[in-house]
Image (cartoon, rainbow, N blue to C red):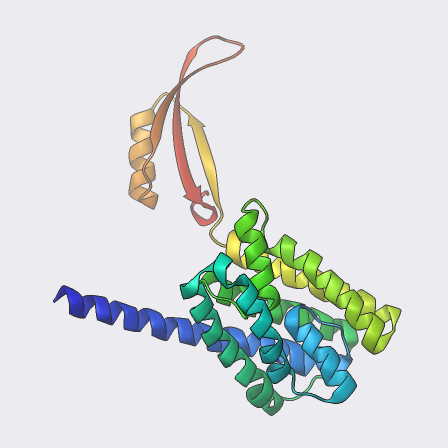
Length: 259
């Protein structure tokens, strides 16, 4: 019975991972193909490098990104581990297919370039964040970025991505557009993408620590437990000015419960 339950759990998890890969892949592909490519923006990651080849030779973005992934994946394999590598291979195949065969089915945006830059950064950031939250990646630059994260846990993925992506944007501008406006739009895209990744991954579940000074600590703790289901801790404190003993209720909760 336990074995059956475990198999069922793994099947549900795998199905959810694939669904997130598809949704994230659509966000990334639409942001890259339908907004960035049409506006000739230098975009980020391996898709940005693949986009350079697309503009120069007309090569398919998804397949070029897939080929570029191979040496980087082999280099980062030992740092990131076998399971992460296999999950990433699945994600790479799904996102590459969506990029080359699904994204062209959507209309290409031909309007204002600033709106195109905003849509590129936000959509791509959402896609990457969803995939990262399922402990996977789109390979390539993600492998390098997550390897750096493993070696430097104090850095956020958004900060690492912004530095790497800015380098790729500069490269794309120098080779493809040679246009200062494109460089500015590329940096805007990079900033928006890294900000969205950090906000989605770290901001949604961010919490706060409440310290409540009260003469009714047990009653306050009971009310917190009743309304939020959160446990509390009692602390003994002393006023620095009055030197009076104080009771403090400490409770950690998420932002939605703080009010």
